[in-house]
Length: 497
Ligand SMILES: *Cc1c(COP(=O)(O)O)cnc(C)c1O
Image 1 (cartoon, protein in one colour):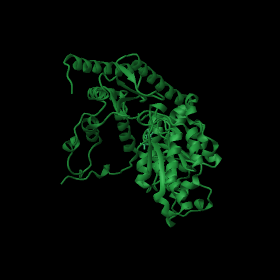
Image 2 (cartoon, rainbow, N blue to C red):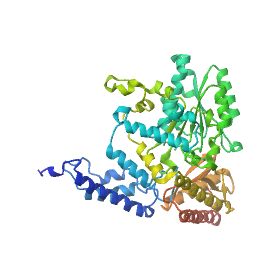
Image 3 (cartoon, helix red, strand yellow):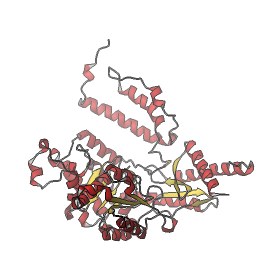
């Protein structure tokens, strides 16, 4: 039996802490330096890691060299490289130095600020930073702590929507009686993120009472207020109770924008909770030229957006603001004896455990605070604008090639395009699916797809932290090459499938 090197077993030995974390830093810096050289979409097969891994935990400690070596040889090939400048799939997950520093501080200090007294600065900094963000977005005073509302940092939009939906449900059931839960109806569009349906299920909404109202090219895939009104009327006529309406600023598939002004009026007329999901598009709204998409925000009850997508904030970070925090707290609060304290009883403090699902929570505010302080609003706007510029350039390439077309009008930095169908729509879908697969399997770039109204399209989501003009040029060249091969193959050999 080997001997346990107990001298190593001091989990927070200061000298070792500095030495080993510096080596990990170096490893990450080196990864960033080379990230462009890896195939963007991982090429491993399911179960690949099981084959490379011992099947039980080591009894004795291993060296950091060995572990970092394994990460290099076994883990990196199994990553899809979200930080690659050639990653154009889903939506980008921005990383930045400032956010990394904030994340290090958060994990290093490792406090658990579930209520004010458990770490007063964690709570107060979060309130300050969400108010800052709210002001950057020019949200009405009523969403800020200084104006009687307030915000919180969640890990994801999914959590934010579950919490607001629970608040809306309980507010309604307090008036209607708990047995009416089967009557409550939730409204979004067929472009609303699937998380709304999941959240509805989680908070006990009857699955038959979820309305994904159809959108079309006529409104550029925005939810039409008249359609919402008609759907609510029909529900009321059959004895149901409209509860919650979700609008989106920058839908996931297409980047479409719902009109808050039009929908807000409907929400008001039918007294439903009106939430805005600005997970992707919200970041852009700090720029005056995009702020118009939030016109009508005064008609809204809650709004969420994800700094972890397009706001240089490493995973995870979602801001949620509510006009009436007491509805959220009424629904989510708990007051166990073990957490009783004077600050809470004074009612002068925020206890964030009552604004979220979990009890324990990370000091996420440090991360967003570092990003805003280190970059300043000026650079954050520049960050958005430079991505928009790249997206315009890519869009120009598509428009300038008669074999291609832009499928839906671009609002942000997401370009939805396809090869024009040559014979039938079905044929066009097959062709574009093949084109996308050719691009992705080359390892040189990674994009994803969407299907709307039976039309298959390719989504090019621009906005990675490392993405520059040359990557957009390279991407277009790659797409053109692959398309030329496909079209030649189809015509030359006259192959039909
Ligand atoms: C990405 C996205 C979500 C999901 O965000 P999570 O933080 O991953 O839960 C929700 N809505 C929209 C519009 C999105 O683009």
